Length: 488
Image 1 (cartoon, rainbow, N blue to C red):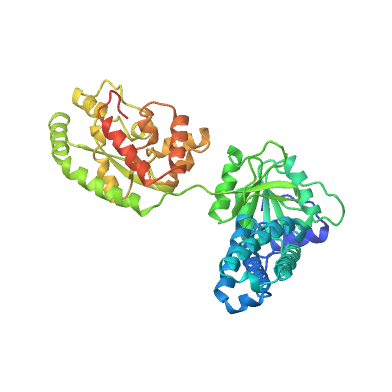
Image 2: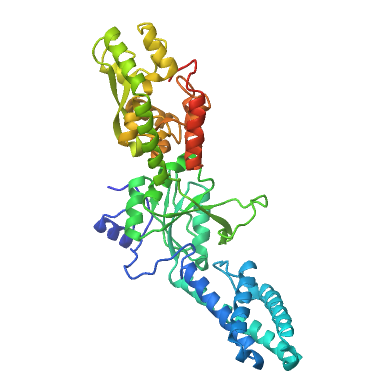
C-alpha cells in the first residue's frame, strides 16, 4: 500500500492498482536519451556543435580571401581567435529557449573584432595590398551570416529536442507553491521539463487547468519517492524555495543518494536576487539554479595524515600511556581501558577506547548518562586525566585502525544520536564524514556540557569547507590548548 495520492480517471486508477507501483507515469524506456535540465539534447553536445559551426563559419569567411588560401596557419589562428572571442562573450552559454536573434549582437561585434585583428596581421605581413577592401567586408559578412545560420540550426534542433525528449523531474515542495509551479510547468511544455510527481510533506494535488492536463502523483513518503525515481528514470529534482529548510532535508538526502541533480527554483520571483551565473537559467519564467550536494571529504591525504600522525603520537606518548595505565591499575583496580559504543561515519557503530576514569553503576548509566565530569566518586587522578584530556589518548589507536580521524565531529553514543537527530535539524549530516578526536567545534570552546546546536553548526561548517590544510590548522590549535581547565 503506497502513500501517494492522485485524482485520475477510472481507467488510469485500474492500471495503477494492477501495477501496484508508486506512480502512474509511464516509465522511460532504455533507449531514451540521457538529458539534463532542461531536457532535450545534452548541453555538452549542443555546445560542441556550436563550436564546430562557429569554427566552420570563421574558416569559410577567411578562405574567401585568396592570399589566405596559401597560408593555412593564418586561417587556423583566425579560427581560434574567433572562437576565443565568442567564448569570452558568453556565446556558448545555452538557454532552453535560445534563438538566433538572441546571439546576433554578440556575434556581429565579436566577429568584427576578429576581422580587425586579421586585417592588422595581414598588414604586418604585407598582404593587405593584395586584398581589396570590399573582399574584407564580404568575408566578414560571410563569416557573420554563416555563424548566425549555423547557430539558428543548433538552437532550433535543441528546442525541438526539448519538446520530444523533456527532462523527467520531480517537484519537491508543499502547498500552495507546488500547485502553482506544477501547473505552470505543465502549461509550458517548451520549458523541456516533464514532471512525474510532487513530493514533500503537505504537498497537494496541483490544480487542473483543463481536461488535457495530466494528473500528477503526490508522494508523501521518502520510500514512495524512491520508487518513483527508479521507475521513471528521474535524474533531476526541482526544490521550491530554500533547499536549506529542515523539512526538505530527508528528501534531499534521498535524492542525493539516488544520484539526482538538484535545482532550486524561486516560486516568488524578486528583483533582489544574486547576479545571474552561467549555470543559472529561467524555466517557464522561474529562476533556477543548480545545487551541489553535501561535500564528502574522502581525500586520501586525510587518511594519510591520520596514519602518520597517529602512529607517531602513539610512539611518542607510549611512556605517558604506560604511566597512566599503571597508576589506574594500582589505584582503581582492574579494567583500565574503558570501551564504549559510539556512532561513526555513515551511522556505523564502533568501539571507542578511553582510560577508565569512572565506573558506572550499570550498562544503562554508561549508555544514557550525559556527563560525569563533576561526579564526586572520581579520584583526584581521574579528575586530572579528564581535565587534561589524557584519558582520550587511547583514541589514537581508533584513528590508526580507521574507526576515527584526527579531526572531525566528535562521536556520540547511539542513545544521544537518536535524541539529537530529532531535536536538532542537520545533526545527522555530521556523520557524512569520519568522526574525530578534535574538531572545529572543540577549538571554539564547544566541549563537555555545551550547546549541541552550536556543535552541530560548527561541525557542518567544517565539513562544508573542508581542506587538508584546515585539518592541520585545527591540530595545531588543539596542540596549543591541550591543557585546559575543562575536559570533554
